[in-house]
Length: 147
Image (tube, rainbow, N blue to C red):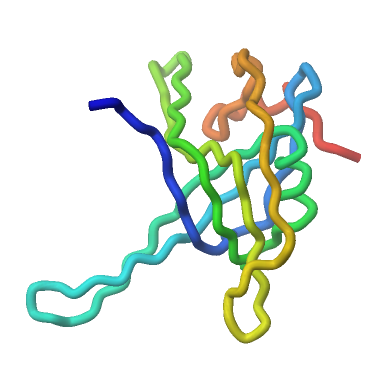
């Protein structure tokens, strides 16, 4: 059996996406997506569970997401699960997120019919060592916010 790392999510943006650039000038966008899951428990009562998923996009897709998505926007995205690992003085750290390569922005004309706005990403840079980690505030100054 071949391993496969692929995910498709539909949800809402929890806060306005943040566009930044690595020291080498590569654009990336970080956002969080709230994804609902409805199920019935053992007694038959309907339950609702919300997962908050961190998402990252790169290059032109990052710029499109930063320009199009706002808090509350409905998105459908395709991507893969990525795990970053790094060392801090306190010990090893890691985080999981979805590295999205396709994003569709949904409209709200009564129902979630896809808009004509969608974007695909090129591959992210091979060397992500200059990538800051949201839990490592000391590395945040390595990025530059767009003016």
